[in-house]
Length: 171
Image (cartoon, rainbow, N blue to C red):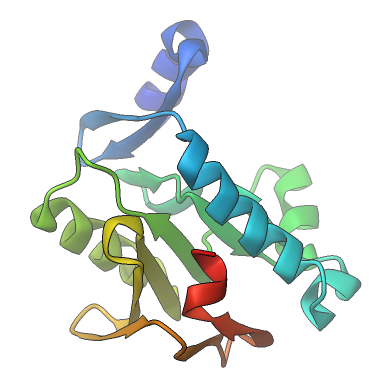
């Protein structure tokens, strides 16, 4: 990881990158249609008790898995304690990650990311699939459920008051 961080300081300032088992993976810039999804989610999060406590749902923040894997979810949830702990140089891991499926991602890429988040201790991963106006919710690397239309989606137990109808996200 130290080698990657050195590379990132020297050369990685022109983009966003993940580091997975020795591979540097460039993250594509957020597209305009993805911006509206991120905006909806972050504004909704601002109405939660977690936000009132000082927690954050933040875009493109590093989430460390272990010494050879660092992911950068489209949105990652961090508690105030985790945020303050970063001042001491401690690397943080998200408990709740939200990814927006991009055109360049394969099914294998999705499975690897989901596995990495759970390996790091995540309790919940959402994969937003804009093309199908659907969200796949992972509660473990091996269990997922898809939500669409007027179905209610919730980030419980991590964020019990973070919920909405899926069609509201895509309105």
